[in-house]
Length: 456
Image (cartoon, rainbow, N blue to C red; front, side, top):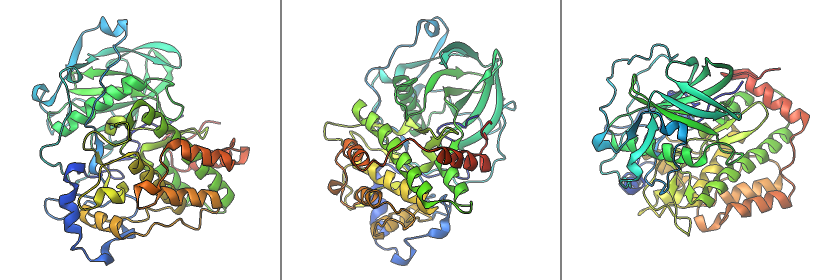
């Protein structure tokens, strides 16, 4: 079967903290006082540790790019069947229902991972929310909705969902795999986001809701399919139904680096396949007028057919004709590009996503993030001090050169469009059909440590 989308990373694995682009300079200035020896905290493993200084949190999510600050102008209308059902507005934070009580709501039917103490994400004041009256009235059906899965129109309600497995969570919601009782052969993923008044969470939730309605099904071969959404009043949550995948690229590379006797040629071909998939997804978003803002291994998913898809659209931000973000973005600190931690920070562009893609490729190839810090201050210092390099595990010369260009410290030296990346891949014949051995490799890795091992 397949694993889920955005939140395939568990809370322990992916609990990054958030910092708004607009406030980044405050943190960056403090990094100047940090001893350079602290900048490359490889001991921090693959998840950032919540050992921040007082009033600070883990560096992982600097402004959890998860936060969107620019919403779509035109929201596709719900279909007629949805329109016939009672609806409830997903409104701006001034009129949202209060946050769910800290005590466990009536969701015992949903499998949950045991909760551990964790530092709450830090959120900066005065997050700029660009929500027009039209944009804040995105309606979601209440208690029941129609979704289109595998060409089938299926009625989904709070009563006919059968939870299967808790898959993971992030700062903005949890994800479970579910079966639909009336269609037991259909398994999907559902992201459940508490409907709180927190302006940051409201912004991300609304943005993801709008983006998912824009994308829907089969819009892009390398972006997760979204089937529909629904308000669950019982739990005071917004449910977003989406495609189920096997695992995240983060879990995938953690597994294959434990394996013995992996051919370097296999790794090279997989990295080419991964680069093509991510860049294709980002190119699609760029043509829609958006950058993603939170590219990282936890937000890239893979299934047992080696299909790779980008997820977590709540951080997408509208861009202008030059590819520059129209609003501050919140994202994962470890994947910030150098220009974003300059003093003063430069505007975020699509080249920031390219840098994050380069870091992701190096992380997958090497089994660890190349310049990790345990707090946001150390992370910014690490980014400033790190001299980008391509690990020896990547052997193909054209691939090494391409990754090196993605990791250029100056954004103008990175590719100026995703078409440039695809041209290089095509010219060098770096993207081909994966061989039988490659597919066998993917299935072996997934079966090692996946919530959803492959079926024979």
